[in-house]
Length: 112
Length: 113
Image (cartoon, rainbow over all chains, first blue to last red; front, side, top):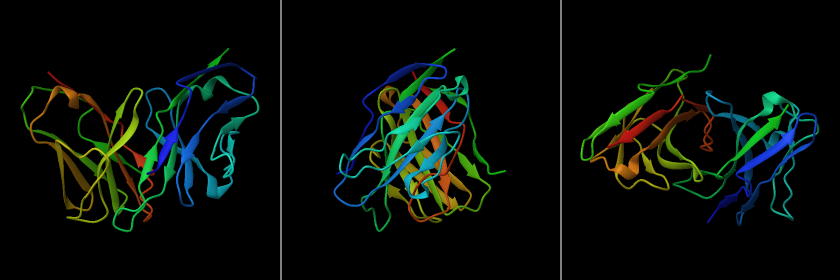
C-alpha cells in the first residue's frame, strides 16, 4: 500500500526565515512525488513534481529515496507563501493506471 | 485558460436525499476525478474516470456513484445522503495517463442535515 505522511498540521515561520515542509512516503516501487498548494479562497493547484527538478515560486523539493522523503523547501519565506500544502505520491496500479495518494496537508503560516 | 467548473459552491441537503454534484471541464481532458477534502484527512479519491462511460473506484467509493456520459462532464451521485458525507468535494481533470490531477474546480461545500 502507498502512504504519504505530513507530520505537521501547522508550520509557522517568520517572513524571511527558511521554510521546510516535511513529507515522508511509503511505497515499494519507484514513486513519483508532487506538491500541491491551495491559497486562501483559491483552487488547489499543482506546485511542482520531482521529475521536473524545477523551482517554482522559490520552492524546491528533492526526492530522497534512502530516507523516503520529499521535503519542500524555500530559503526565505514570504507572506504570500501562506497556504495549505499537500504532498502527493503517484504509484500503485488501478487497471494499468497509477493512482495519486495525498497527505493530510500542512498549513504554512508566514508571520510578518 | 483551463477551466474546471463545479455547478454549486454551497449545497445543503437532507439525510436520505439523492444528491447530484456536477463537474464540467473545457480542456478535452481524458481523466476526471472526484475527491473529498476533510480537515486532518487531506484529499481522498472517491471515483475517477479515464474515458467516456468508464469509471473506476477510488479509495472511498462507498455511498457514492458516478456518471460520465460525455467527455466534458463527470457527475458524482450520493445515492442516499448521510451526515458523514458532509464535506468539501473537489472535481479535477488531467490529460496524461498517470492519473495525476492537474486542474481542480473551486469545490462544492456540501452539508447534509
